[in-house]
Image (cartoon, rainbow, N blue to C red):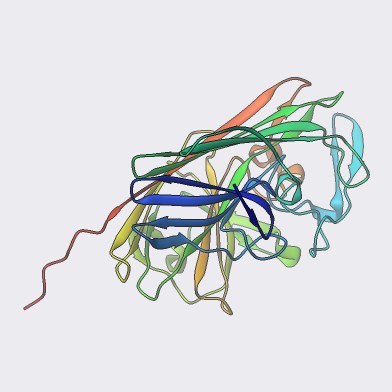
Length: 296
């Protein structure tokens, strides 16, 4: 175990796949396949996270307030953003529970305070098997009342000029002020990746629904590709692309929509009674990109 910028780091490797895990945020700080990075350290409090878990829910809460079960709750900002963002796990220090050369399990326990009313125990397992990276996240309500919970993973995928994304969705949410979801509708042509295409040079910070949990990413310049598979608990995703940074993009499997506390049916958030658990799994399978025959 070696020291890293975000606290103690743990190196995992299996065959051609290697990652580094920080106990700060239970975050990946590096991920390579055949010595080529497929995740980029570009997020988190210091910009050194290549992927991090979102718990007890992801994204933002409008007005830093919510009502549930006949009670009103408030949040305080927890980072640079004026709205409480991505939960607490990504900025907390996690305890090491298990580790080997190919896997690590970390836990994060939190009590309610003036930042957030949520009390919970989260666990993140990161496991390498063959050429597959598996991320398993769970959360248990440790509070005294039921609250709506959610989960998500926030990877920062490397973006090259020819990066190609294949992912299908049934519904798209536009973006309004404060980076909150606006109205749902059909997927616009520019953001329709169902048949696979290169990433547009556009700002994107949008939620999608009606997803089968599968996506494919190809990096022709690197000669590698990834198949992402999220289980049924993670039935939504976010796409985040910036115009001032074209070296990464984020494809974030989530159990719920951003700002679900203020949406019908809680936007997919799951009310957990004290002691109940919610879990979700994401795998990323890496492989060599098939060589295309040269054109005539």
